[in-house]
Each structure stands twice: as structure tokens, then as C-alpha cells.
Amino acid sequence: TSTTHHVSTMERINNADTATTTTTTMTTEPTTMTTEPTATVATIAVTSRRISGIMYTSETSGNPLPTNVPTSTVQLSYEGQGYTGTIPTELGLLSMLVKLQLQKNALTGSIPTQLGQLTNLANGLLLYSQQLTGAIPSELGNFPRLGLYLRLDNLALSSTIPTQIGRLTSMRGHLQAVSNRLDGPMPTELGNLRKMTNAFKFNGNLLSQWVPTELGDLVKMKSSLDFSDNPEQTGAIPTELGKLVNMEYMMELGASTSSSLTAKIPTELGNLVKMQQYFKIFSCGGDTAYMLGDKATIPTELGRLQSMRNIFKISSNMLSGSIPSQFGQLSHLEQYFTLGSNTMVTGTIPSELGGLEKLTEFFEIMNHHVTGTIPRLVFGEYT
Image (cartoon, helix red, strand yellow):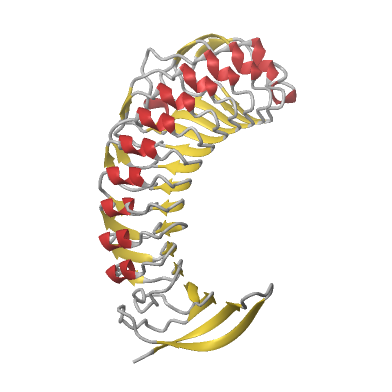
């Protein structure tokens, strides 16, 4: 039997500058994907005689994902429709797909290896925020054109990160697997993703080693580099991260109470002079969790981050030495200057901190063995 969809059809007229839009009902012959959807109505846009997108918008809560999708479909979205069950392996037959969105449903089971057959994916594979379990298939490294959005956040994945992810050399942004149970070391092959500019995030997992030095090769990165809250991490903060001189927003390097990071803060991080917001080196475990060991000091070179405007945080680490007077050069900082719970810091509060004249919210120097007063210019007057 044939399958009937309600369709919004857009056909561009050859040799014309305008497009004609009609609404009709299209009957398609059955494809190799034969399972009937349950009570679904699809909105389909047809451009140049290809089906460019399907978005299911009807009452679908509690139903399995439809599998009778036309094989000529280019974009497919089932986002947030309340679908349950597993991801059909038949979706791997949609060889023309450039974007697949299955996020924010109630899907269970593992990620099918057959999704690795979607070698035309270019604009995204989004599976985040549901109940998927198991491993990240190595086949997800088979997307040579994928430039944006491999989103595997907020699932319950429990494997290592496949080295094959390092083959996604067209990736420019949003490689994310936040808040899973991923373990083992981060593959050095991720350093091959040299086109990455934003959203490289693996925080909230169980990764066992610090980030590989090869990530210093991601010199186009501008924002959202986050490896915080991996409580099993050991090793050193790579000095090579100082090569990421285009970073402007969010570098978060943190750990939890059981972390065994014992290295110093690299002075090379002072090269990140374009940083404007969210520079954090911290321990998520609070006062009892010390990330950097008792020989680490606060590098004076961090005073070169003079573009910082919001959230400069180096806290809950067992740092020693004195507070660098160079921090007074962070004159554009408006919110959150935090050196909290670095219990081995000694000396006096530098008068140069009076250079933080734009700071209006949250100045913290807590649990230090320091003396002196907070300069009057902080918060515009004094505290």
C-alpha cells in the first residue's frame, strides 16, 4: 500500500527568480522502510524535486519513531515529540540525510551502528537529552562532511571515547558529550579536529586522564572549551593549551573531590589575551578538594588577560605563594574576581587590585593567609 502525508510543497520554477508555494497531499510509494508510523502528520518541504525536510508535529508522545520516511529525505527532525522505544536501525538507510535531530525525546537503548552509514551528514547528528545507554559507536567517525553538531549530551553513555571521532576533520563546532559516564583517556586523535572553533565539551564524565597535549593544535578555537568535573582525572594541565590564542569565551578546567591533578597552572595560559568571559581553574568539590598540589603558585602571567570582563576564577585549589600584583591590570573585569579557598596563599593584598575599577559584583579572597585591606576602588568605593 502507499503512504499518504500532508505536505507543504515548495517548487522552484526553472529560470525564474521566484518560488511557487502550494499545499497538497502527496502519495508516495512504499520504500524499504516499511513500518507504519502511529498517528503522525509530517510537514515536508520539497525543493528541486527532492524532499528537503520532514518535521513530525502531531501528537506522538509514547509512540515509537516512524520508519516509513522517504529515502530522498535530506533533513529529518523528531525533536521533543515524546517518542519512546529505540532508535530504528532503518534510519541508516536514509543516505541523503544531511541533518538528523532526535533530541529531547524518551528514547532508550543504544545508538545504532547503522547511523554510521549516513555519510552525507553535514549539519548535525543530535541525540541529546534522553535515556540512551551503551557505547559511542566507532562508526560515528564515518562522517567526513560533518561540520556542526555531534551532540551526545545528557545521556547515560558509558564507554571510552572512540579514537575514530578524530576522523571528523570537517568539524567546526559543537562536539559535545556532556554529563555521561564516559571513562578512559581522551584520545589524542581529537587533536586532528583543527577546524574546531567552538563548543568542544566533555565535562561531567569519568575521564581518567587530563586532556592530551594534542588539543593545543586546535588553534582556531574561540569559545567553550570545557573539561571540568571529571573526578577521575590525573596528570597535568598541558602547557600546549597556551597555544589557543584565539579563545574568547569559556575555558573551564576543573575537577571534583577525588581528582589527582598535581601540576602547576601553566604560565603559557597567559597567552590567551583575547579571553573575555569564563576563565575558570577550580575544584568542584569546595574547600576540601585540591586540584593542583601544594607546589603550585598563581602565575603572574595571568595578569595579561586584560580583555576579561566576566568571571575570572581560580579557586578551591591548594595554591601557594602570593596574589600577583599583575591582577590589577584586569581593568575591564566587571563581575567575579575569585581567588577563593586557596589556603596556602600568603602575603599582603596587593594595592594594585585597585585597578579593578569596573568590578561591580563579587570580589572574593577567602581562606588565605593574607593580610591587608581590599583597595578602595574595588566596587567603586571599598569593602
